[in-house]
Image (cartoon, rainbow, N blue to C red; front, side):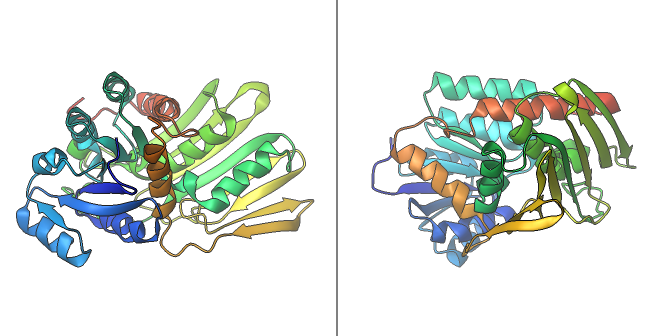
Length: 329
């Protein structure tokens, strides 16, 4: 239970994503950064100093044992999401874990079971789906503005760091394109269609380190609906999503950041929606967590762990087609 009028956040990890998240907490109405934890005391102290955070801890254990922390934001490498989330729940903390929330379905089922057994809040930090232009695009679909959706085209790719031991290319850290960037187009298709595809055709390029560096997937759903999804950590892409319906389409430039959404009919622009965000956009998911906790809810009303489980099922199915397993699985 939240003790005050605002949620006190504990930040686990001090990387770039943690920096962006804690910066955007300044633009929320429901929460405040209270503590940061790192495996190195110096890193935690430096992070706390730069972002004016009251508490800095040289271990994750100390962070989650702080009685003042209401919720832990987990921004560690993919492989450690399950361990870090379980430990946080067992310490009585609500959890917002970066995407992908776990590495596979089995891990996520264990995590969901733990959260429910302890009656604690759990959510995946799929920040893209909380951005106002993305929310508006999904509303247009629900309202029937583009008719029946028949095709989702989505891509996300960039040229990443080529260090073999870095998180992108290291199989021991669950590196690769699918879990790092592919989760965005997969999440979008799942959010729109709300079900598993009946058929999956996919291909991937496995690099020298043993991770998927690029992939393409064609998903077929009931009634002939489909999704064409692409991801890469070696190729720069436009990162665009186009949602085609029987009466129009919606274009989301820079899909993961969703600065705007534009509705087209018969090739003509009908409406464009953009928001006036002050940060990079992480404030929206943070406020959703804050509102949920202050209201006593254990799940986000429209992005529950069961939804994340559907995304994970699809990610697992794609890896199974490629024969790709991580060394620790």
